[in-house]
Length: 262
Image (cartoon, rainbow, N blue to C red; front, side, top):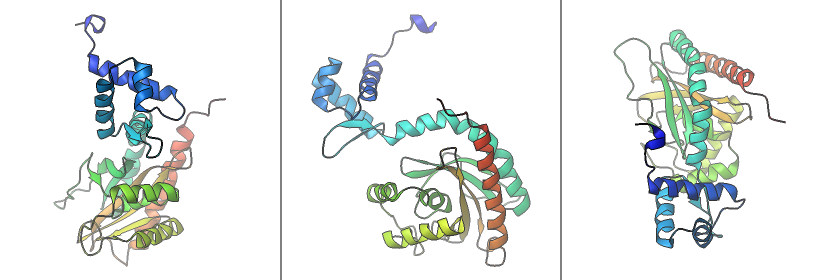
């Protein structure tokens, strides 16, 4: 059936009307303002707002009680604009890392206070990590997550800690705000993060950020393996290879980015 002849879903239309109104506002809108400007019943607006809040598309400012865009909308926009390009550009880099190290390579982005795996490349063999594209991970105990966190400003890190917490996965997990921030400082100094059995006992990972044109981490890439595969004897060699790779990928992203609008 042609799109022009298919009826729209009223509830979806109303939800987008709400989003359009908030997009045009500079400081968000309160429930009474949205009711007035939309012309919809208060009960309908309230139900729509609750749904959008629960799905992460909106958030409510505590003091002003105004509704504003949530991180999920921004992440969806970023993924739509650059996600496919990023995965395509990263694929040969991940494959190269796997061939040179025999380890599993992952790429992840920060989405709604969690790391989300968007690409994975494995070496041949029977050893397989229990990871998959789309898997969500805590950021405080994974090398991918810490590589992304380390280059956010302190306010963003505090917000993530406050809202998501620091859940313990095992005795190695960093569950202290101070210990985590100390580790993020070490990550910035050496250029890469380490997950030393903090997420899963027996596994060790090294992760480093891939920077976008805006100077912020667009993603992070990690190399993962058992504690026998990544150890004190080869850590320096593996981390050097990883840092060289993310540097080249960051430069590739910068060259392919559209010029800024005048």
